[in-house]
Length: 205
Image (tube, rainbow, N blue to C red; front, side, top):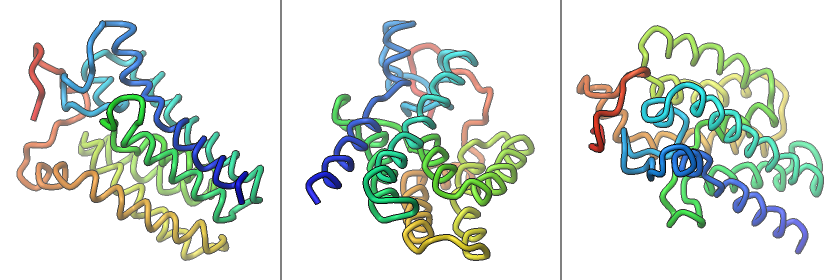
């Protein structure tokens, strides 16, 4: 039990490493949370720093989710509650990082890593549809929400463990809560589209 608790804590600490904040500090000497949308994630990194840093942040954030699930799998086994809780802990760490005053991102890239590790094919199908949506609408937030909604729907049609299914539903609800302002902006036509640039030092709202 103590070892299970330890890997969950380690997963949270791993998730708390905000690569967006670190790269912005390293490359520009700025706090990325004060620029663009104010979000410490890959999309805002693209807006503020450009494609190279954004791709780096995306891949590293995905890897956090993968590593956390494998930590839990190592202790508890494949598709167990320990494995999925470690994944959720990494997402929570990304959103509320202890190293950065609990101001992080929205956890979608880390969610991709978690779900792709727990249920590769359902996540791949949901991800492909989400990417198509992003290409059509240029709303990353909309594509992200489609991904988290479709993953548990596809899981219901396949054969996966209860921990994986219920965790995917929990993550979907969690993602909708984190994107509640984006949802309002989408309906109002004010949501930032991918490729939009940050202007000066002001936050884009």
